[in-house]
Length: 124
Image 1 (tube, rainbow, N blue to C red):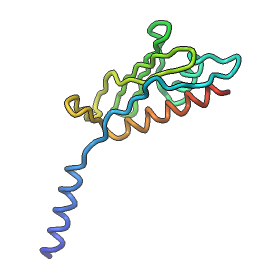
Image 2 (tube, rainbow, N blue to C red; image 1 turned 180 degrees about the horizontal axis):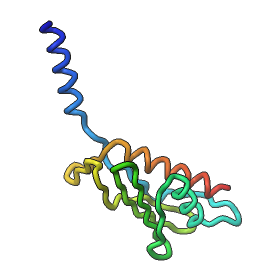
Image 3 (cartoon, rainbow, N blue to C red; image 1 turned 180 degrees about the vertical axis):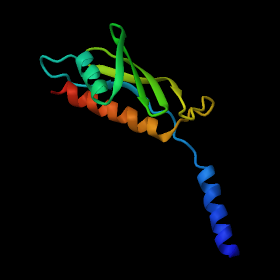
């Protein structure tokens, strides 16, 4: 019985001490855009396809907002004709720690999916 209690306590402790990954950002990623397509169109299509709400702040800068259940993420996507970045702006209910630059693990998945889809839509 003591062994079971010890193992249970150890498992709970390990789960509580689990660290969150650092904030994933894309920096000046080069992309080849297909003829007749623009990087702006690819970013907008990629975001909308993944349920991001995309808003063009000014030429060369799109802001994306994703709401999933009770989580919210906001990113800036500066872009040129052949490159883009995805930069963390803010989040709600994502356990963001600015001192350690860490955030809930789902954030990386959502941003990586957006990044992958931008490449895919740019090459269509």
